[in-house]
Length: 151
Image (tube, rainbow, N blue to C red; front, side, top):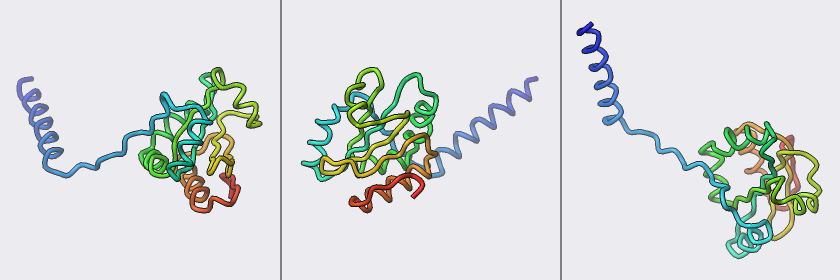
């Protein structure tokens, strides 16, 4: 028993030593949509900063919305891209019902991208991080085109 505990301690110490010696990858902080401004405020701020707005329409009761938040939007590549190129905004079903209706959103989740106050892209539904990032790169790389995740 004593040798088993000693062995486990040795493994743990070895693991810690390796983690301290080898360089670790620094992950981007997951994007925070918490306490985001109203859409109109974000659009005005984005225009003054020369950025786009990425608005995610979501609901707390929506399973695909929670998956988008928990997997896709928390992916460091997605978070880093949004932080670099856009202002993030959540439009929550309960709190932003009128805004969501005015945007003619018919399903959750839906991602809307705005540039210069105009909607330039819309992506309905859940998408894994790689697909979502490709959508954002296509959209913000060519702001004149209205695109969807399918192309």
